Length: 431
Image (cartoon, rainbow, N blue to C red; front, side, top):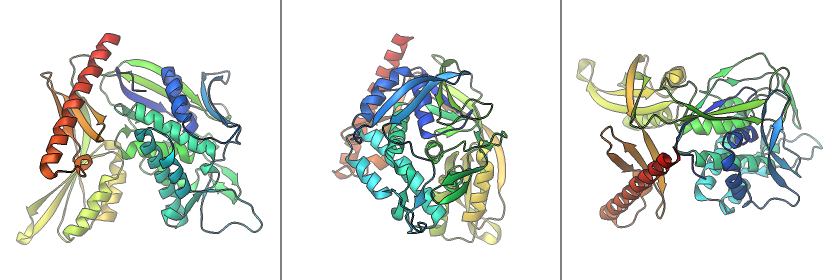
């Protein structure tokens, strides 16, 4: 299923919180036309006998929406652990190794993009678990979170992420929750340790309502969207039109509030409007006492900070005629504090300079071309010209050296432009 052409932005409003099943349900309720394709893709999973996947309408007597449920298998609890041999005396635990989940997804009959997203989601969660428990990521095992229903949740989320790959994602502040949860390993605080790791750099609020409001699957989905620089926590000021909305219900009942993740879809800019304005932050600093190797490692880690748009470095002459490296980072304003901490940890700089600048950007989409798989960024210029740029990383393994890569690049860019124009033609026909 491809994204409905007029949709430019998908906004997530975690009223009750966010979990993997709530994410899938919210998108399904907003775009009911996606349900048949979702069920078809999930049907490719070899589920245990008696397991049924269902997207059903639901009401809590306040709001209506949908639930995404896996029946026939007891729904997993939201905590999990690393396989470090630290089970309590006499306890019996069913768990699924991360390597086993990864192998299963690679062998499943899923579309390549869906498989890629699902693997990435589990990798993010495994890395958080490894960090919390102090073990190698390959030694991580998921307890309840690795059960079948959670695999289904991640594959369903991967389907929706792929279907809306060209849209911009935004998310409102995430309710942090409070209290304690009971697990097979004792009582854990809310949010769970791995969830806290995944929420780093994401704007949260305490609305005073207790309970676990964000599950590890929900936090992993947000982290993935942020890492891909497709998600932000404040809405752009560019005027847009609301075209659809929906609610995805969670499994719990919260006191005094509907446990829903609301989704709102916005139309793309009006026909003829190819540029939009926004405000971004610029962070600048200089380094004169780190080697080029160490700076390269530091900048790679800085690029992973949520909200980072670009990272530049350039040589300058500093005091006493010494060569220094100037670093300039473009980032969305709400992530500046997280970036500052990262810069002070990863580099030897003792000070940062901040400024805000206006940015004008033109509408663009990343279109995946097959045989070979090459991502192509396509943009429409103000004069109506459509330009394309293939991702060099995807061309790296093309045979034939420079000439082979050049040929594959031109072919992928030409096909991407044709695809863009066809999408625009279909969009105008629907309008």
